[in-house]
Amino acid sequence: MNYALILAAGQGQRMKAKEDKLFMYAAGYPVIYYTIAAFNDHPEIEEVYIAANDLNKSHIEKLVKNFRFKNVKAIVTGGTTRQKSLEKAFAEMEKQSKPKPEDIVLVHNGANPLVSLDEIYEVIEGANKTGACIVGHPVKSTIKEIDDQTIVKTHDRKKLFAAETPQAARFELLKSSLHK
Image (cartoon, rainbow, N blue to C red; front, side, top):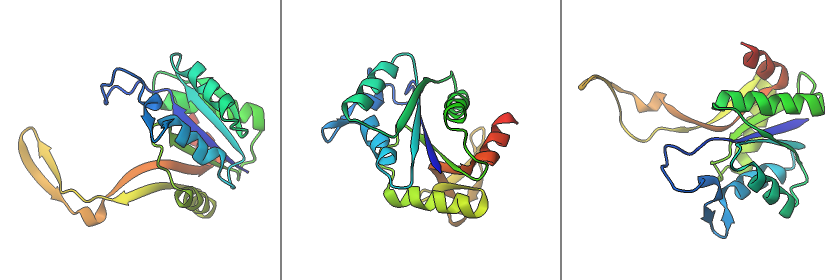
């Protein structure tokens, strides 16, 4: 079985918006709609769990109900950090579903609505083969390492990838990692 944990408990502090970026509209729907739909509607994802915050949880619950996202099994209150939110969503999934060691768990940021069908397929396939897999894209910008205000090194962008979500791992591997 394949599970998706959507982390939507952040405060969006880097964006400095007056409203929760998850509920800003894009092409007629809130951003979080597209994120949930991508996993709810994916043929290889059986269950979805969402970590929300105190301020947006009721809005996410309403959205899930209104759009009849049938694969969303629970919306939990996340923690003060991404790690704590992941732990809470993972614990709820473990409690409700009793995953097998080889089951695949995908972790995705709620504010990343443009995940593709193929990216989800590919991380599931990669995690089945190797135990874990992440989406990454080649870096196009020149990356400079600095020490105070002095450039120390220019990194070879051919060796760099920008890590993104979804990230996937076998249940047993992710569980072990969370406990460490």
